[in-house]
Length: 241
Image: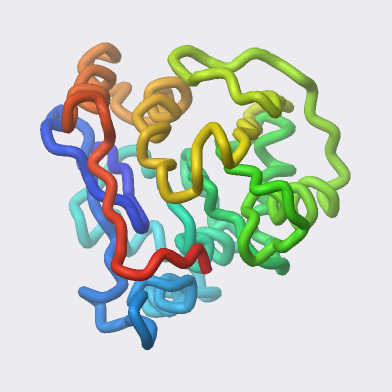
């Protein structure tokens, strides 16, 4: 059994028997933020610490808890960087998809995962929405470039999007197993990223999970959910951090 763990995103219905979709909700573990948005990055960071943190074994604990004996991938949106950045600094899941999930600095885990992916390590896909500003707390695209690609010292090569990903106006680039899709805010706003998620999962994540069953079985269910859109969980206060 393979698993995809979803952070700040809903789980689609109808996944095939060999792929388990699991939402990691910090509130159910007793971690939340004050104010209107309970799901800020601090809540996700506390969840990571609760599951093992820097001592390691977070993935092993999740596999044991949910009965997973196969591959493990993560899909994170927005404030999910509070969990995924430290996780990637200590462990290596089979694949990670960042859906506009880079805000602020201190992204050592992302840098480590990007460097590994660039030389053929576990898949890392970053899909961003560029607001055109240099505010790393509100423009995830700028944060990805400034605090991941720049300190990693990597130059990605322009390429074509993997079908069925729509071509971003600001380009697609890759290096090894590292992929970067750069959309403009006008094309797809941060809070509309749920519309792109089924496409990026079909394009990139299907090879990282579900291979124990027919390859084709995993793809249609993701696109069929909710009339062609991913089941996307929005929270009461729209803040990326």
